[in-house]
Each structure stands twice: as C-alpha cells, then as structure tokens.
Length: 232
Ligand code: URA
Image (cartoon, rainbow, N blue to C red; front, side):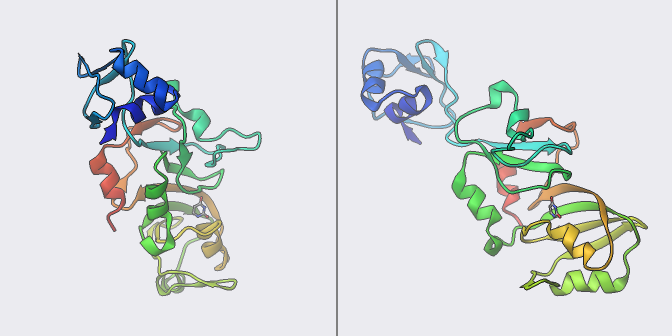
C-alpha cells in the first residue's frame, strides 16, 4: 500500500506538491476513475494512470535472468557489459541492481531487484539461504573432497559453512553453498587440485532457474516465486 501522492511523485519524478496538484486537478485515475484525494492508498493491483498514461505501480520488482558468460553481475561493469545492460527497455527502472555476485564467466540464475532489504536478507551469511550450482571439472572428485565440502572446509583463514557436493558424472557435480565469498566454489575445488572449467547457478533457495529463459533473457518473478527464494 502506498499513498497516491507519494507514488505519483516517485514514478513521475515530481515534487510532492506538484504531484498533489496533478491529483487535485483530476490528472490521475485509479482503475479508470479520477481520484482527487492525495492520501488514497494504492495497492499493487490498482491500475494508476497519470495524464492518460498507465504507471508501473509495483513498489519493488524481482527479475530472474539467465546470465550469459562474459557479462558482469554488478551495477558498474567498468567498461564491460553488465546484467543491467541486458534488461529490455520496458523492464528498466530506477534503483535496480544485481543481488549477489556471479563471476564474469559464471552463467545461470542472476537476480535483479530494487528491493535492498530483500537482497540483504537473502545474501546475508546468517540467512543460510542455499544457492545451487553445477560445475564442470577437469577431473573426477572422490569421497575425501565430498567430506571436506560437507564438514565446512577451511579456505585460507576462513572456515566455511558446510556445503553439499553431489557427483553427477565423471566431470560434473552439483554444489549447494550457503554463503557467497569471493570465487568460493572455484577456490573450494582448487584446494583439492581440481579446476572448475564451467560454472552455472541453477537455483536460489527453493527456486530453480526457468529453463525457458535463453542466455541473456529475463522475466519478472511472481511474489510466490520470490517467497521460494527464501525457502531453505
Ligand atoms: N563461486 C564461484 O567460484 N564463482 C561464482 O560465480 C559463484 C560461486
């Protein structure tokens, strides 16, 4: 629920007093009817138009992208293309950022949102939200590697949270981690002399990457899907 004058001022980049003036002069409709009271409470289901143009009234949006290799998952690619550059024009809006980092060569499930609190909640190491990846490896893994992942391995100075490692074939494995330190998965394998030759994120929480999304494509998540990200 948002006040109509705040919504109009945010979406049209107007001062609050100009937004109020627009409302009071009948320039704003909600579900097709002119609303003159500035404190009208709008819900996400309302269709709000200003001067005949329908506004995007969602307070926050959550976008799933199938990140291709070679694209940076940061707001500033410092010369390189970012996941934000791949958004189609109609999905662009103020305040969007990628929630969490994937390496430039990592592919798969990237989440883009303008909801800072949500991003903080799912990325905090305390949240223990699992992130699932499939890695292609240069050699097979053995039980000692699996146990080290499961026990919470030491990497440099740091002791990691327990992770799950499931072999899928001789050179592929599924990994589930509950934190996101720099190059975490590549470094966990490197500790055992194994090189990750390809890495893709398939899942955040209980939500899987939509298989219909081609590399570089994206779509909005429903609120039920957003909730699934928070499920362990
Ligand atoms: N671990 C990595 O090494 N790289 C990623 O992009 C994500 C997790």
